[in-house]
Image (cartoon, rainbow, N blue to C red; front, side, top):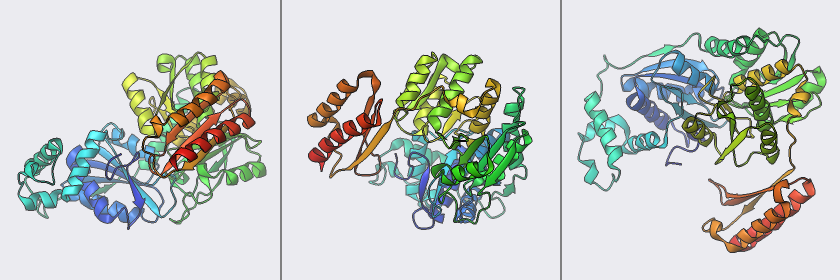
Length: 476
């Protein structure tokens, strides 16, 4: 992670941590580093309008065109970049975070999140104060000053200044253009992905929790166009209710709705709808591991699973790995984070990857996680099978999992600690191939996370507690 960019863009409490100045500079950087035509989308947060205005101003100050898609899911922006042949995309959203937060993430001309080296150049641009500061300084030899230690970053800034020649006068700045059919383009893409397989959702009753977020404008519309009956909640929004005790991070409202309306399946999105969680009629939660298992097996049977391989993270349930082994599908596991899943998929040419949280990437359809597309392809697989939702997810059995977060004084050296290694080795030897141990440090907090999976909940708890006690003793 960089100085400003985390694992998923720049994020913080809006107007105090994520400021208008930052949004302006990110907009300016998008136009200068990626190209003049930038699609902007946002979720339903109150601060979205404010940050959209600032980012748009940054784009226009650099001579770019801000293509305003309005309230749309994050994956819609990635799709629109390709459909509109834009140079990049800028999403104003903090995904599943509380309403007071917001974030800005950038997509390149192919709808992919930016690589680290481009983010580093943008961070250098922000540190220097943006285009105004570069012009004011007259392009000094910053490589030889204490402020600059990265020649690559400087060369990038120098080339920008050479390219624009200075600040544009008022009769040469860029403009903002509304994308009137943004929602229609995105919804139609999802609908056609199912219809092209000769399928629809006629006779299917879907319970939907839009989480007071961007999917309020898209998911019901798509499902109904495919013939489903939809009973929805939390499709209204006031800017401060997004993700609040609803959506994919709190499934209680969906569970209650399912019991009340008798739907065949439940669907819940997070605020920017790049994730989805599903539910069976009896309230069983279908997380990303189950969804990926169903999709991967269906894709293999249809001969469209690239490399007969599914990508997940080290946090996927052991039951997912076992299910894939039984189906003759390889599993590649990456570090936690969708960007690492995507990097592996692109590097090796794989077509499906995901996380337990419900973030699924289907590169045959979109360049980033797409909650609506994931739900559509999952339901298409169920319809094609001729069975029920419960039948579909029976391809995988979830192993009991225990996760303990141990607060420590310092995370330094934990990987080389002999006592921790011995505790892990002892648990692994006892569990054999009927369980799994994962110990890792939090990337943002002074925590060591201890996760154990086992055939029984009792074994998972006992082994996790034993390792956690050692971690606490030697690091606290």
